[in-house]
Image 1 (spheres, rainbow, N blue to C red):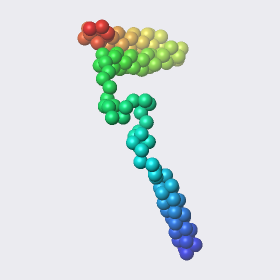
Image 2 (image 1 turned 90 degrees about the vertical axis):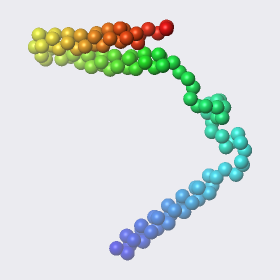
Image 3 (image 1 turned 90 degrees about the horizontal axis):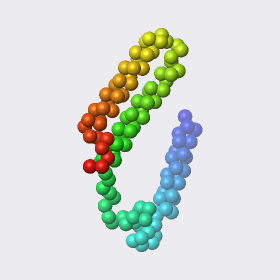
Image 4 (image 1 turned 135 degrees about the horizontal axis):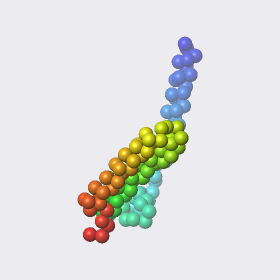
Length: 117
């Protein structure tokens, strides 16, 4: 028990020493404004980091991601065709495609696919 306690205390002492040493060595001694400011890929760090972007582009990107995920759900249907009944497989594929087409029609009807407005 005494050996375990001494090992734990020695480990704690060594880690505390290393943490103290690293924090003292990593301090910046030169208080230059350029060196103290964060590097922002050439942008002035005093300006706002929030740049305006097109909400229409964001909506198109989200719609693309949704339909892309649905297409990845549709791809395993081709591998499943020999394993199931052909009528069940056809009904399932047509139902899934109908849902995709209804979603696409709804987005088109709402005008979300119109880029230039």
